[in-house]
Image (cartoon, rainbow, N blue to C red; front, side, top):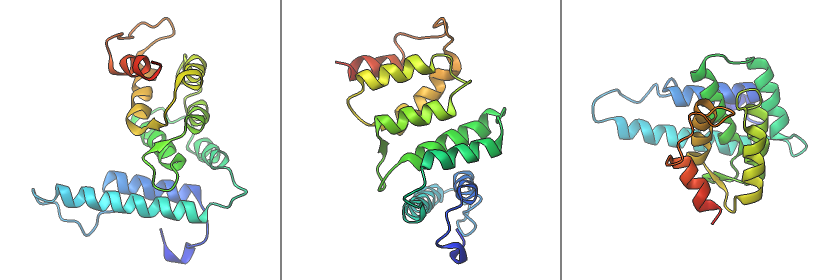
Length: 176
């Protein structure tokens, strides 16, 4: 983020910065040699940590992060391209984190899923109800990603559902 804008919260600029870090565009000074993957990963982690810190310090307390995410979603449009949507989906998880935590609360996850997966996941309401009733722990980034995959490959009649799959196993173990 530009230091001249250090006190201004702009969801569009934050999203652009996030995408630049994730795509590697922000890594101008990191070489591309064969042994530099660890350096690139470290750079990305640090850049995302700084961006999250910026968000936490600049988001006005009267502003809902979900209102900001909705503005961004409306501006981006329907995002037919899955890779674009996937980046936005990842960004939503990133924005829902607090104080550098790696997980987000169940209530934030459910609100976020209802915002971003509406019209994309036919079992969204059932999924959210299940999570609210049975989930005892925060939602990890791994689980967040699995829900996106689940939403893409499982149909309303549960065609495509693998009862031996990782998400069904997680659901089973988290309710016990």
